[in-house]
Length: 108
Length: 110
Image 1 (tube, helix red, strand yellow):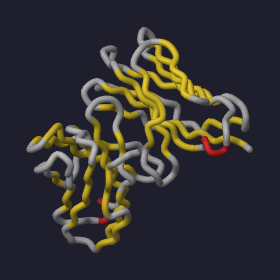
Image 2 (cartoon, each protein chain N blue to C red; image 1 turned 90 degrees about the vertical axis):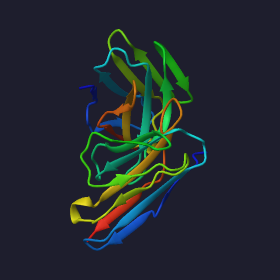
Image 3 (cartoon, rainbow over the protein chains, first blue to last red; image 1 turned 180 degrees about the horizontal axis):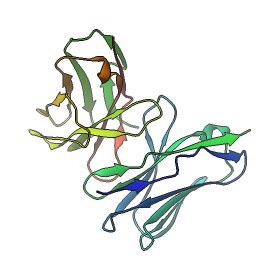
Image 4 (cartoon, chains in turn yellow, brown; image 1 turned 180 degrees about the vertical axis):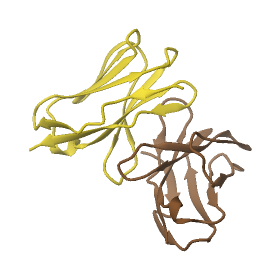
């Protein structure tokens, strides 16, 4: 059974600080990794994709992938109250397997 | 800009009614998916399709059925709605890479 594990949170981070979200996955052959943001009552929105080891930066967001450790993370710099949401880690082999999500709360 | 549309956005119906939730995408994606999600809970895959005339059941047992007669259209049907079907239903599509989600249909069965 392929699994994607995330801490459910809530993770509380002061405004302006760095939020760090972590995810581990069980399938070593997975090739594609994604982070989705989901606001309460809304559908998931793709915010980052990463396919190779290392870091990928997009604005305030940085995704980090370590395939040897089967670990993917998302850093959010200069956290804003609008970043408060549930963040879903997703791993694709055939179909995408979603984690259960980490609730992030940015404290004003 | 995500071009995947779900209708209706909200639906309240009585027990025993037949309903169809619509999902259409204009991106030419071959793969389409239906997820069920209760508030604050995880996504559950209930159906997927890899192309026209191809449909498969997902990980969560569901009493719904789907069809894929056209690439762009992937409707989900409940023959007899029950209160246990109350949930949010999300449609998604992709060709490669990540999924693009529609806005969802929030279904309430009374």
